[in-house]
Image (cartoon, rainbow over all chains, first blue to last red; front, side, top):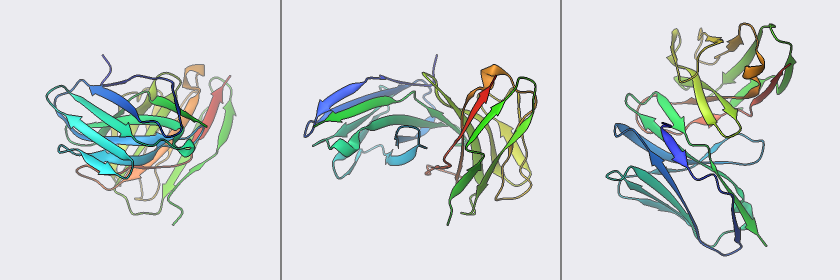
Length: 110
Length: 113
């Protein structure tokens, strides 16, 4: 069983739409959670960390549900520049091993 | 700061050849790691290091060696390349401990024929 599972999509949404991605993780010892963004043929870059109380950064909101072992990312008012693959990342145990989901592809259409 | 740099950007190897992928960072990060990214598989951790002289295996270490003689450099060696090692390789670095951001290099695209 994979440590982290994501719906690969693709999600194709019009500009201005709200879109949500979910990610589930299997290890209850998971301690830290992140969303990374990866543009085509580029390296991943941190979008935001996910805190237990949930957190927001502009149009992006991340939530963590430890009981159900999933994290979510909500993007409001989608922009063309939001088109990318979004990677869910989980850090387990001692904090030295990071597990990545396969990514969810988003295309924002004019 | 250059951040995390990787060389080469592209490489083609024949089966059985060996090579070293270079990774360097100038942020004085203790933690460095290597990942491979394959279609439908996501990034998988190959090896990581929490400081000079300390390395450990990740999820998919077979066929790869690493060493960490300095804080800045963390090379990845392919001992005898196989077609299954065709992939995109990313090096990353971060501070150690707790939730922290990983900074990735631009990647090396390796093809083994």
